Length: 433
Ligand code: HSE
Image (cartoon, rainbow, N blue to C red; front, side):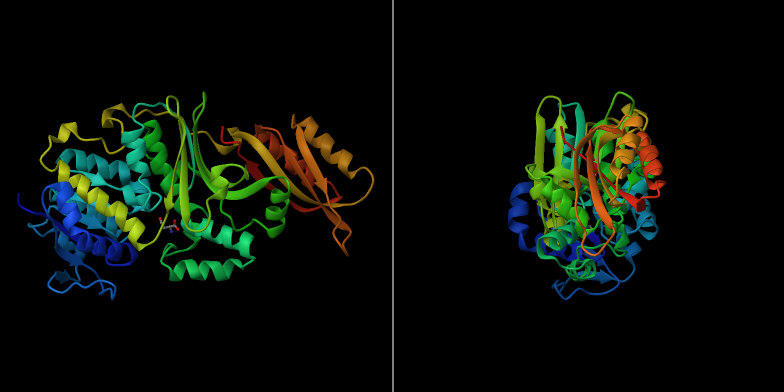
């Protein structure tokens, strides 16, 4: 059979991993596909010293790649949503299949991109867009396709998890760990995307669409980062038997769908609590299978390249298949997506960890517990500690499940008490049940 010809756009971290896997594992890949996969052309602004591109047609204009009539599959690894979108749309217009690692592009422009791909009878594959090397898209879209998915929760940003793990386990500073994540190629071009949860929100948007068969709705995903979490919060959580992780959560409820990214306390006994460093893990709860967990490297050249190349292999295998019988882009048939409401965060119900700075005098605790009780909030545990050399002491409360709007009202009232100093730190608690 004649070889499948691919064009790679972008030769950065993921581009180099993809290139080297295609080269190093070419025999194994040919044995899997039944035909060879050849790198026909590379479009990149500059060479990458970790790739020996001798003998390969390299262009500085990435649009040469999508307009090259020899190429069957365009691999988009430039990132971003402007040029990358034009590139992908042009590739689809030219009847080429596309493999991409671009989560922002899929989360923000996926509905339009998939419609164009559908019209042209081509595939857009994006396993590498979510959780680096973990085959979570394939798992959700195919392996779990018998299930009605109830919820999923994951650590889906390697940089953020690396920062939180190194800070809590080794006492390193935020800036120091972030600089290392950037040097290792884990972090986004703009690292606030990692730290403020935007990258995780892109990934969650994609996972939720595939899990529930809903259109991509990035703009409705509630997003909160890790930059406000303090060493004191981490220590109190640990004392209570919890670990703070930055989670992406999508849950189906009777009122709609929750889509949220925020730091959360989870029991230290949970497998997810032990996912550290750049590793990612996603729990999926299906009605038939029960809870499942997939785990692996969430970023980096070879792990992400592994997912890109797996998609290339998938596309190569289906090149001769009838387009109407392919696995749909968002797991459900395009005309069967449902418009379930995405719930505002105020409607979400969960437990809370509150960390307050209060004056240590008679009646303060009573005032706080009264406010919580007035808002229907039941306390699970309370810790008050001495803080040396300060009139203010930390008071930590863990609550039972309550709607976010009730908690917001209670926190406003607590913050208005003259004996309470500064804002109340609120971190949600997830039981993952
Ligand atoms: N910046 C991302 C992360 C890269 O750290 O997870 C992989 O998407």
